[in-house]
Length: 74
Image (cartoon, rainbow, N blue to C red; front, side, top):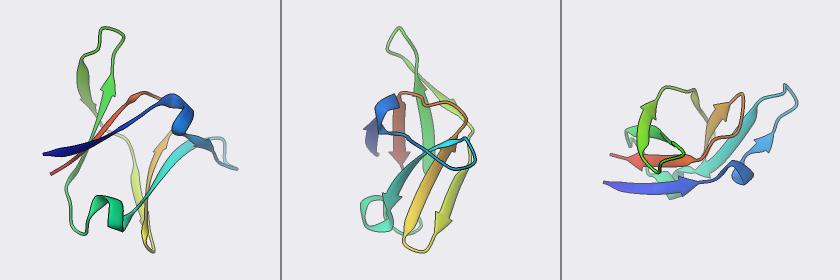
């Protein structure tokens, strides 16, 4: 499985007070199963459930506070 790592600094604050990451469908792939894992302070990862929104050719990961982690493409 491929993955994309992200950092807190990668998130952009939205008008509604949330934070989001944006990826294009060309980066992720059409029809991929997406899994979000949050990185803990000891370097391990755990699966979390957060909203993933799709709009036109973009995929958005939306959180209330920026996190460090990775997006797993299955």
